[in-house]
Image (cartoon, rainbow, N blue to C red; front, side):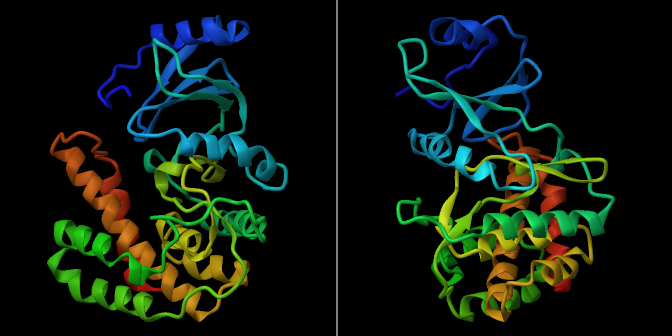
Length: 298
């Protein structure tokens, strides 16, 4: 396998297209900033190429290839849909995928100014997504566990970046999540990794959802955390009113997960400020504002 430091250049991308999809090889190519597990390249106006970078295996992209075309047909927001498969080769011994491009600005580089509209849009998207998943759907792994099984991750991020003046409030929210009853319904489709870098905005509201590498069948609370992570102050209450499927236990689990995810964003932001590999400086402010919303509740 290639190392994570392997340079993925425009010339390499174009050569791979010429070898495997020559009809696409002359379209304009430009790198998309950001990305962690995968590096993205725009291909013309309507397509993008998803290149494995930090991801150590092909499973996440294979999962997207298998399920996104099925889910896209019933979701009310655009999502990336795989249209061509790239195979490993001597030049690049990992898989890569050509997907539809979802137009908009990633929320970690943009903002939501139409909060009511965004709350309604997010609730509609998740109501459509959170349908019972088939028996062969991918199961939960690190994403999807009950908060009580995520204590090590929470403690890691808490010790790293939790503001001292907020520590008691954060621990209270997390404790309520850990003590909440588990999801007892049938497993539903869950995006699993909704945070500001994995949604795009346009005209002040949500315009699309990307990066389904964490997709699994299980507890929807992992997505309901997005009410605090994505929406402006006050948006969580509007979201849950419109979503109308979450009981008290689900809200408690979701709020605790939102606290942990906020700390994760802050940790990635701090790493970016320090120039560490994989750090994302703009995630820090996004995580800090989300944490404030989490502590205010609904």
